[in-house]
Image 1 (tube, rainbow, N blue to C red):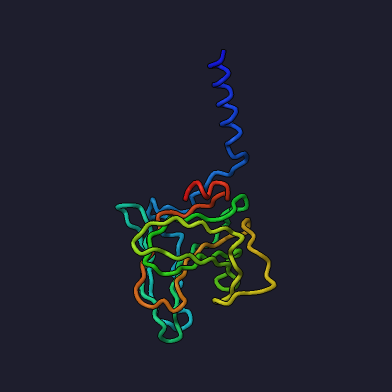
Image 2: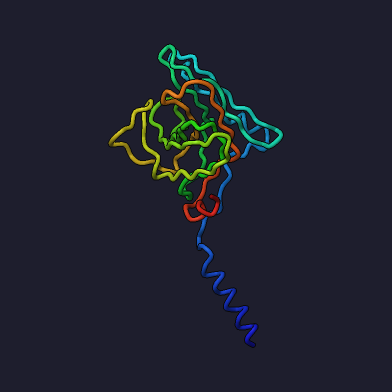
Length: 198
């Protein structure tokens, strides 16, 4: 009887300690197939006369995405970016993004858009990479700031996760020269299981 009682108590304790109503992580991109590259588009400073260049490739050996290129300040340029084709990502049940990346020590901006337009307001959160080291970075939606062409905006509604239609990564801030950011995966997560993935 004592053993049976002990087993029941352990089961009850396990149930009580398990996070209730936790939303499982949603993998948005893990570059497991070449088809995923079709969802991404390069947008560099050439749209304003600059000469920076970049590309996004898939490493088939370890199924990672490699965003790389060269940033130049010539001709009023200074940024390189990649962003997804617009679609409804259905992220209303999540609190933020969790990404696993290996960088070059540069600071990158993760950018989100809540419409299908090419230009306009975007919401951004910056993250610093560690040269040649894999890191996991949690980016809460509530910490994304509204911007327009690099300038922070006031009197703009906060990011609405359920309206996110575009994801993007950008390097700027006069970080000139070659850059490389390796992306293992991008997930949407519940804040309660974000720490468990770090």
